[in-house]
Length: 286
Length: 290
Image (cartoon, rainbow over all chains, first blue to last red; front, side, top):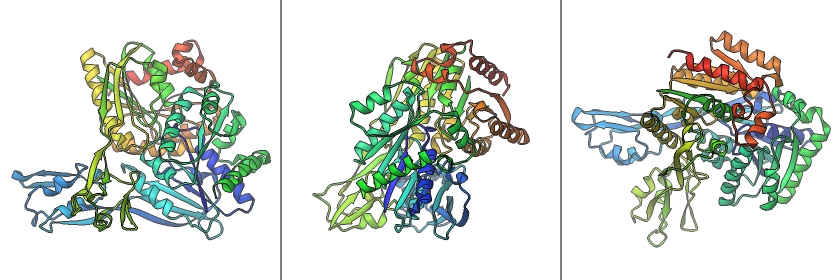
């Protein structure tokens, strides 16, 4: 089993486009693949496939419940909480948990010596499993609206990957902070998707910095080639970074994607290219 | 003072390009780049650095192996699966550590220290159309919502000090913590979408979060002519749900050309159809009473 993450610093460069097309090219060639949509804030990969939902797993986190009868308002829980999730006014005998700020670390329960804190689960999101043959082939992390961090949902989705599959394609959230790190850190290889524009290059540099720091192998796909300028190409050359593939800007490709269709189902040339790319990564990294 | 946030749910719909155009249309403004994960507006505006402030993005636990006995108590308390004991040696993953301090508190040997993440920065300065504030989160660091709050506080302070009435906030993608920080307490929210299945889905999720805060919202459908029937579908959905579509913008390659020349589209060529449309939309947004 090898995990390939599809990521980018800048949003909207074509991560989901690349992830869904690689996945579908693998499936068409009878390769046992799993697609994991890790963009829990804005998951969209499932919309590209005709598939059946086979099950749902709730992602929860524990938050404290304070028994104000047993509580002595000593303030130790408040002191232990590094997320300012416990509001306390001892003289007024007021203590409240701000659930939105709680990370569920359990420090307050450890702090309390009066047995005044218990915990209850709250829902953060769902892991939706989809399949056409019984075994989950698409795993979707979907954070509830209003929840602060997608990270617990991402971690839970990654745990659902069946190691018997040969290749897992992880569609990463944009950016270079926690949600991105959670996705790329479990992967064996990262495909960074960028576009040849100043914004694309700036965000690519930041993603590359992060991947170098955590020592992950990666290569770059330039999407919408033909727009913008040559700076991205020059920068890749100067830094000896592999250019894996170029996808030209083409209104027809944009239209196919916009309608929720998969390019490689209609264009065997691209199917071949995506398949070769995945195979090449599989052979080098496995 | 009016604060207008530009957000999108889906990345790459044109938030920053449209924010840049709004910021250069008329009068002096404060422009706050709240996409601290991937700040881009400074590339167009090359602002002066009048102030640089260190942002502490949480903490990470670090073991002192001289004191650690490898008892594993820390591992049993950690709820983020960040600690493992391998051959009697405690290993803490800085990637998974949430910075909650619990391990450092329960360690009987006082062998765990919490170290501040201090590589992120906030900058403020001037650009050709007013003042600019932006944050840059160091690669891999967390708590971007707090950095967004810091950028917004600075933007308000700057606006008050310089007598500027309008703050334009270029938001991050998604619907999580940094987005919530970017829209909390603003006067108006502009949601930029595009005519794709993903654009529609993400816009719907974004509207849900904006409505939780009861904020006036406007939709802009960018690149609408790349798929006119999908644009129509988005418009119809907005009409049914009584959400104002402020306007539609055509796809124009000169949007990228302007970016390459470090200009907003309205600076690059104010006579283009797209520039005119952006100006009309901006007036519409400004004129709506709170």
